[in-house]
Image (cartoon, rainbow over all chains, first blue to last red; front, side, top):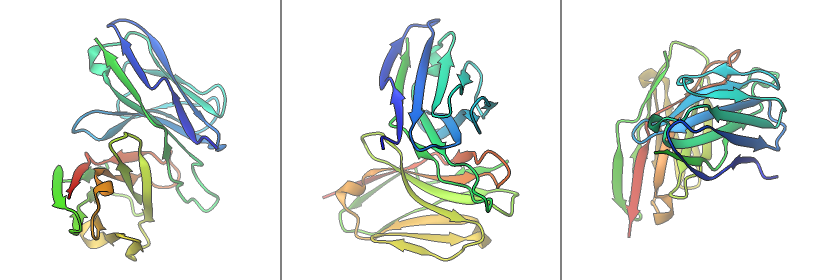
Length: 117
Length: 116
């Protein structure tokens, strides 16, 4: 199993350009998440999905859109990139909630380093 | 609102020293989960441990051990006989209770530098 993969690994954009980050998981996980990591701020949740066809906002959703058309994929879009969106983006996935209400562990992809000039 | 505080921004130790990374959390929930992740220089996030709020037993895994104390809202991580390969940023995280989307709130991380 590849686990959680992210495409691309690196990207440089100019202000105003758009792009889509792809996250794929082969673990049959229900829940998927997008985080951004900035120096000194840990990881912050952008958007998440609790199943195919569903998405919801996290802590810092502004400027981003997401889609979960297939269970194994979670796309993060930047419609008009801004320098403030320069960051490392991590995707994660988990089974979500077990039958006993146990919260499952999130497993992370390798990250995408995005620079917006 | 949930909050995780890792007050130690950076720690430097010499190989073979023991080191403890502190994690203090805030939550109003009675059911929650705590996690530790490691981020080595290569950048990926590696899961280390998950602990639920009803299990206060300390856990040991090789040179790693975790001390969970609800009375002080702390979940500290100790590395015994540190090695250069332990050099990384370590994150503590807190999850929302069951019934939600299991979202994680991360601390700001502690950078551990182990030198020879």
